[in-house]
Image (cartoon, rainbow, N blue to C red; front, side, top):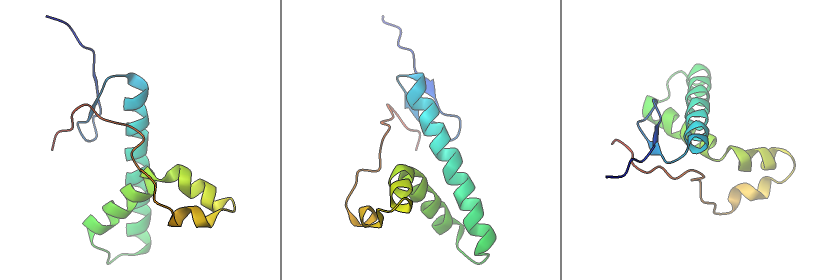
Length: 92
């Protein structure tokens, strides 16, 4: 029987085969949570699930948003694969 090392993200239970991917995913989720809080603080009547979806969307596309803010807003209109990290297993 082989032993396989995996890293589990505490925030959502996603599991990864290397520490860097797990830490990157955790940082993305932390950013999503902070964006969600920002949205909810500035739009008090927004539905919580909507603000969470927006926070996650923006966090997943943070690199693309940074490029758009630096003078290439047309990039936001192109189709992009948001997933930069592939979890082995996610608890759902």
